[in-house]
Length: 269
Ligand code: PGA
Image (cartoon, rainbow, N blue to C red; front, side, top):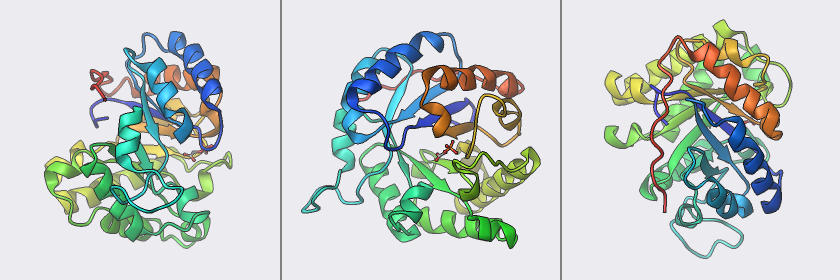
């Protein structure tokens, strides 16, 4: 994922067995054959291997939705980055709002996970976003600044350029509500500025910033046309291959003002 190309990530959450995953991918691939958009799917752990097998030799990338911050160890029930990588994951979502709010993950732990993902050579997609209460109090930028500076503290510039940011207002996830495109652009520009402060303007510009929260075929064109939106993270609307393919097709219209190029798929082990 780069800021020059346009990316769409589907986040399946805790949906689809391994068999359902491969059926889905077989249905999706012909629908997105000629797209110039980078397409990624964050699937449940148990589907990573089978999904990666079906996606092999195609531009589709498979990733995970979470990982542990340790390399390995006595952590019953946890999954390490190296395991994900070997199973075929090339990226991992970290700090998704459901991890933060349902499983009580804090910025410090998410920071450790980002570091570990970079060490294990899995591209981290750091999810950030404010709650409705913070939004209502006009604290969006304050919250985002804190989430970014804690999660990305101490990361060297050359490593920082491998990170992807997904801005997902908590109140927009699964709710059907989205901020206006002006609000999205304003927040993305702010994120870009914070990244510039942390890593310098050159690296800040390289880091892709995705928007997530109630993205669907009907609104993706407008969202994608915002200057600092480099892609979208899609939950509910990624569960059906036809709907997900419509999102991918509709993005191109909105993103066509930008350079929409597909990067050659990097080989994963
Ligand atoms: P949604 O979820 O598209 O269903 O709002 C987005 C997400 O949780 O990443």
